Image (cartoon, rainbow, N blue to C red; front, side, top):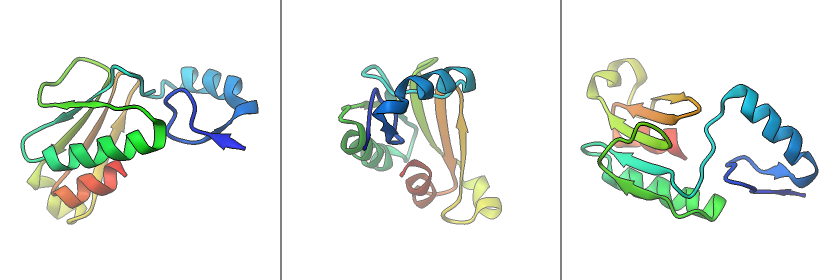
Length: 116
């Protein structure tokens, strides 16, 4: 049976956890922990709350939200209306590194789909 373990958003079968951790370390995947912060840039506060709740339900972690970007261990939500012609109303850009996650969209709907 798969479980949400150690902050992984994707359910990982318990028997495969060690192998998954090794793969994640090599790939440089971002891993949630108790210090991860959701950074809500202007106009993204509601979606930051929605994402925090979805991650709490999936992982059991209560992530803080704020407006100040930290150098690492954060998920940044950003609306850039210049992306709307390229992405449409529900599109988004998702960038993931070992240090942070950046979700950019032209609208709140795009942020919703990028985060959920």
